[in-house]
Amino acid sequence: VKTAVLKVFSAVFVVASLAVACLWWSPAPPAWTEEEIGVLRTLWLESLPELPPDPSNAVADNPAAAEFGKRLFFDMRLSANGAVSCATCHQAERGFTDGLQKAQGIGVASRHTPSISGTAYSPWQFWDGRRDSQWSQALVPLEEANEQGLSRRQVVAIVAGDEEYRTRYENLFGALPDLTTADAGPLNDAFANVGKAIAAFERTVMPTYSRFDEYVAAVVSGESDRQPALFNDDEVWGLRLFTGKANCTQCHNGPLLTNFEFHNTGVISFPGDIPDKARVTGVAEVLANEFNCRSPYSDDPSHDCAELDFVRTGPTLIGAFKTPSLRNLAAPFMHKGQLETLADVLRNYNDAPEAMIGHNEAKPLGLKARELRQLEAFLNTLPAPVAGLPANIQSK
Amino acid sequence: LLSPLSHAEGLVVSYTTPDGEPRINSMHSWILHVETESGVPVEGAKIEVDGGMPEHNHGLPTRPRVTQDLGGGDYKLDGVRFHMRGHWEIVVTVTTDSGVSKVTIPLEL
Image (tube, rainbow over all chains, first blue to last red; front, side):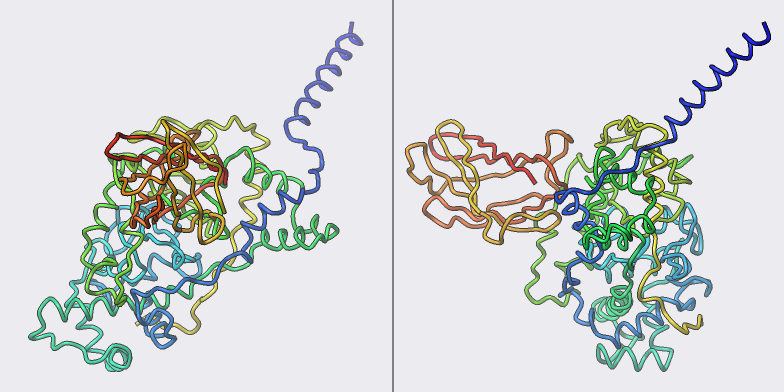
């Protein structure tokens, strides 16, 4: 009887082990076809086109403006309590985000801090795209009560009151307005110029080569012996899922792994918050914004504002947020940092729950646990340091 | 680049993309050409364009618009952008004195 029981146990053990092995084990991935390599190329950092000009900002590519903007970016005097700068939330050492769910300035802001890396390529800024340039974006936190909490007059006064800043400003933009008499026009000009200097710095903040890019380089050049050292089998399978049945490249496409468009993916609302209407309000705000592309504060004499001219509005944008670049992948995730881990994010896409408001564009994926693990392994090859990291910045 | 033709209710709409083949995430222009089935250009029509990805149940990321009637049945369509690969459908609504026609142009990106 004992032997029989042992045999049964052994049989059960063997079957169970095989089942576990099937769940966790994958065969070696096949070689990439030419067509697949073509797709990988589109995601490769080498495919990033030259940075398009920003005609709305005359100093966008001026190194002196970037230098001035860098100082402003890290300057905590630019806040009502003297303790918050742009860099409080956009922390260079964290890829220009902060690791928090919602941004923490003077108070708690309404959404999660997005990275600024690569945002010079985006027609829209913020999770809801409520600004259409980096410079007009940079002005918002300065005046937001929970972020830096200043008035625009106070911002300009800080620049005017610092001899070095005043010189840097006037070399770039001409004389500062007399703050005792300046009315809205000249004051707004000077305020916009502060944003333009900050944007000139932000334009230099770019993603760098990740392990994924090294791997694509090895694939593209046909160096098959180098590939296993760069990507293990799980990472390769994860990349296959990413470009295949997991549908990730529907939105996370191009070399920045984002299409910079707005999608409702049924992410659950932040605990205690009513669901965020997102793009549907963001688009109304950008169209009305006093510093948008059509405004007199834009430096583009042609006022060619194709993004605003052809922008989509309407109810399909309810609950739709801008696709974030995956090159800045860092927890927590989503527009309010609601999802703590990548596994949570992947579960959300795998389940594709009904959206709390609007309509979830995603469909359930039916991925198995092993596939989710492989996808996660691949995603972890994407983070890389950010270029444009400032050296020797002293917080004032 | 010349598209396959699309028919509906006696009209034929074709398009060319003067800036080369459409690339995703890049705003570009199309030239639409509208003619009757017997090949007569449809001039002076009111043209409206919409579309999307039926599989994903979403529209175009932008709202393209005809900005110029080039004559000879040609119309300049500006503000076209696609933000995903896959199957798209562009729906062209042509309004003339004789009525309204909808023509669907399929597109694989």
